[in-house]
Image (cartoon, rainbow, N blue to C red; front, side, top):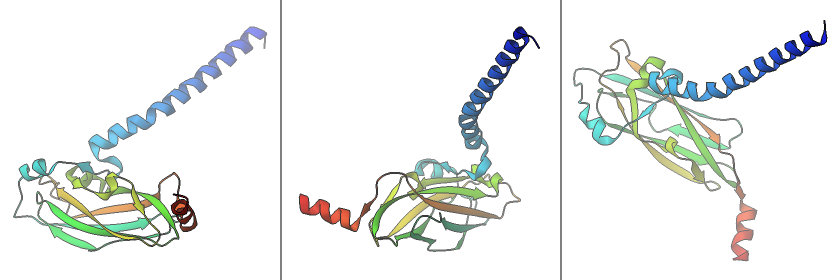
Length: 189
């Protein structure tokens, strides 16, 4: 090969690498957009209580909603739903409670990530209030009951009779405070 051919090949390879980087960079926001509009990935929606009330309740239909709770293996928390399963009328605003407890000796900030299965039900599952909207800070040994208010849309496809709402708690990045550090901070003030 001559020098000109090598240069063209190097430019082509650099262009391909740059194109792949650009595609990878754009893929994340594109995926987020697709998930938001299609419910792909089991993402739930957010709705105001006024909008939820305006949807209307289907009194002739019942849908079972099951709750699945998980904690990432590195997070020293216990996490569970108060009820494992409930039956709701589509369109009815419903509230359930979850309990999280920090079993460590340090303050920890956690973030819950929700998902809904089957995926085709996700666009019809909307929350008005959820602990997953913000990070949760639990002191050492602290136990907290946290509500979730949701509505299963009345337009949920007829073939869906059971919906599973799943949460996984992860430790949020950032500083954590142990009992010793907290006590030292109080003494110095």
